[in-house]
Length: 203
Length: 206
Image (cartoon, rainbow over all chains, first blue to last red; front, side):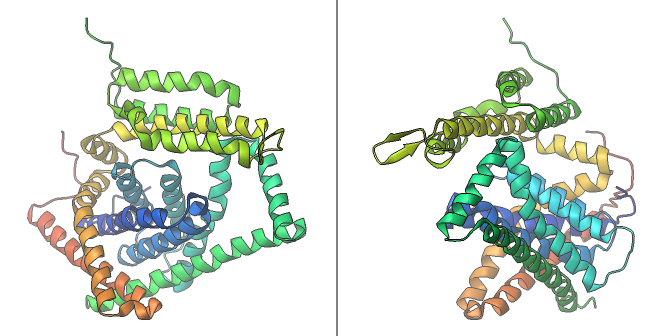
C-alpha cells in the first residue's frame, strides 16, 4: 500500500475518522451490547455498527480521496479497539479490518469519486457482516459446526412453521437487508461528506 | 535464581499470532489441546503481562457459559435431566468452541494486546512510513476528546428534540460530530506544520 503521497493533513484526517469510528465502536458498541442479548450480536449489533462504521469511513474517504485512506482508517480503528478498555475481541477487530479492506477495494483502479462508488463500498462493507458469522464460526467453532448449522436451520424452519425452502428465503432476506443497509450507509457517507464540506465552507 | 525470559520483538510477536491463528483455523480439534499450553508458555516466557487475562472474569465468563449451555442448545439429546434434554455431542461442541476461543483470545492477549503504544507506533512506522504511526498517535490523543464530542452532540440534539424525527436527528448528530472532529483535526494539522513535521521524511529513532 502506497501511503507515501499522503500529506500531513491527510494523515490527521485519517486519524480523525479512525478515532471517530473507534469512539463510536467503543461507546455505542458497548451500549448496544448491554441493550441487546448476546445472541443478537452479529445479526443486529453487527449490522448497526457496520452501517455506522461505513458512513464514518466513507465520509473520511471524501476528505482524503487517496488510495489507501480507507484501509488506514480501518487499521487505526482496529488498533483503538484493541487498546480500548472494552478489551480485545477477535470478532469486531476482524470485521473492522475486513470492512475497510472491502471499501478500499471498491475505490481501487479508478479514481472516480461518484456517489455510486460510495454506495457500492457501503454494500460490500455491510455485506461482510453476513459472511463474518460463517468465517468466525469456522475459525472459532471448527468445521464440524456445519452439522449444527444445518440442524439450526431445520429447527428454525420447523419452529416458524415453514419448510426448509423458506429457511433459504429467510437467509436471502437477511442478506438483502445488509445490502440495503450498506447501500444507504454508502449514500449517507457520500452526502455527509458533502454536507460537512459545505459546513466548513470547503465546497 | 532469575526466571527465563524470551527476547521477542514486535515482528516475532506478530508472527507468533499469525501462526497460532492459522493453526486454530486449520488444525483438527485434538491438535488444539497442545496449542493451549504453548500459547501460555509463550506469554509467560515473553513476560509482557498478557497472561493477566487468565485472572479476569471477563475471560472465563463467556467460556464457562458456552460450555454450560451447549449441552442444552446444541446436538441431538441423548438423555433427559428432568424436563431438560441433554446432548453429549452438544457438550463436546461447546468444549471445542471454548478451547478455540481460549487459544485465540490468549494468543491475541500475549501478542498484540501486550504491545505498548510506542511499540505499535514503531511497527506502523516500519510498515507504512512515519504517517501511519503519526496517525495512530494523533487518534489515541483524540479518542477521549471525541468521546466527549459524541456525548455532547448526542445530548444537545436530544435536548433540542432532534430525535423526535430520528432520521433528521441522526443526520444532524453525525454532521455535528464529523464537523467538530474536522475542526479539531485542523488544529492538529497547524500544530504539526508549525513543527515542520514531514510524514514522508525519515523515521525518528526511538
